[in-house]
Length: 495
Image (cartoon, rainbow, N blue to C red; front, side, top):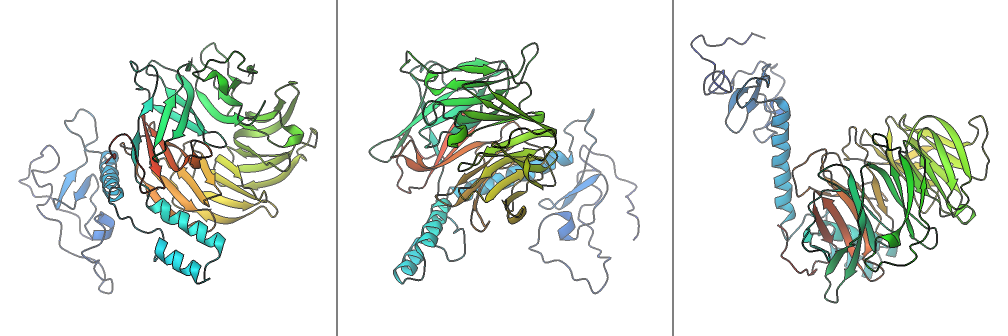
């Protein structure tokens, strides 16, 4: 291939060689072999797919049909970098997806899947009841539209301007625990209460007594000490002279009614805790676990009795099974192993009941109701369903985006759905049964590593009589994606 020859009379401009770069038009010569056909005109606009010659230090803009110089990015006016170009393209795609989501008619998650066809097949006896319910949920997922929720508070003079970091719903999603970044450093946390109105609307009330801390919250889970979801368990990272700890806070602390007896309030000196989980098995119903660097601690919250297990890496994710007192752990090394709490500590690693591996660090674990199956996500964006009995993956959910972030996954088995928010700030929903990607929801705000949405999905958001749908917190805004197409709200539809 011949080297590119630059015209001698061109001068350097701000973005390239004169106004049009090295050439006013893209090179028309095609040096490929005769048996290689030219790509169609409707192909992708990228250089690799359009046949445009790639030049080192330049990029080709297909809309303007010209080259631009990529400046090094220092001591230059309006420098162009590949990161900026990629960000521009991502932002363009996000706006396109937002425009598609605003349409009243949505694309079906599967070809030929609609409510009338499903109902017809059910009446003809061609569709079992379980399959009908699952497919109806998929149709509803495709029709969810975004609504902005106004958070009510008795202190109207101080509107919420702090960005949401994490939201975690209790077992019935009547309350949602929130962690917000504070502008001057640290974070604050509290509880939002949800209630559904008689006309099918959803209202949100934030508790008045918020707690502030100068330490980062690494992990959160609801704990059932006195009754279901009576407490919240938090892993707090140490800051400066303040050591890290694991705090067990009564949920009644975050109440506008100001109860006289908030319940047990504990703080355990456990430093560098990456993850936590609460055990609901009756044999160990007051126990919780924390994943640390090179060890796992299981502690009884009432007696303080502690069991320690040595591990060779950081434990980033944990989840208890319900029927049996078995704790699953996900490590930075990619290893997943289980601990049977009925087996007291041993000096060797024979207490590891099951062991299997991912290719990257584990970020989230979820044990299904059929406890023979486990869902695991890692920092390569892989989400797999494992058969614990044979320690082999049986299903993979493709499309998740993650490179290095500590991101959770969410499961709703009643609707047969799996949810995850990627590092690209897209929320994706899959069919739990077969791994089919049903919906990709863009963030209402531009993507950024520190602006990844946090979500909660529930069949009854706001309690037993609540509304089904998806709750999304991003920046200082709260959005709701209802199943109901006739959902009503106090404000206008957020477009």
